[in-house]
Length: 254
Image (cartoon, rainbow, N blue to C red):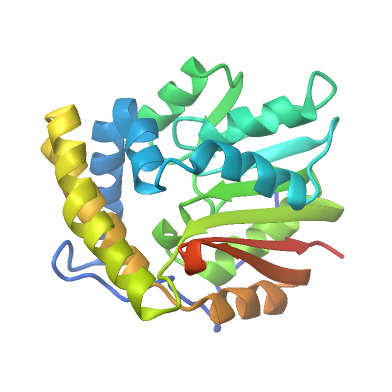
């Protein structure tokens, strides 16, 4: 039986409310549900473009670097159309297992179509699994969309087995001025219009504008690492690429 983490006085959202898109937390959730359901068939292509085409090899290398090996049981949270799940399945092989979880029904459908046999609809803050179920948890480019970092990380810790590993992939605000300006122009101005022209879907345009705004307003990497540690993870660290545009965070359950 799952024993879910309770609300904490040290709750922390990944970014402040973005008033250009919503006013309340309920409106934020509704916005994301609609947007992700609408863009699900094209989301894999859109995120590949947003990551400068580096997504596939970066995901695979990050999973290996974080300790994913053959035979492990993996939970891929906010799995989207299954891009990280597919990479994980290739690594764990037939002796392992990958379970996907996503709040969007559209994304769950897409992940099933990618060959991930077990995909459930659910949220990071309330994982529908018993304690100590998984060897490894991954989350790809979705940490900015949770409601509470502390609750999310405590749930991850709960369902991991002792010694289990966590990997969070993210696109982040680069550290220095020039990479930041290039990334901002590309992700805020170019990608939304490319997404619209490719898909003819206005939801794709709005989602990718929102995508950059969550990146720009997200809490700094040091805060994410600190919350991982205060939530109970050990050996917390980050790996950066492209001047900090691509970051992954990892930790281990004691």
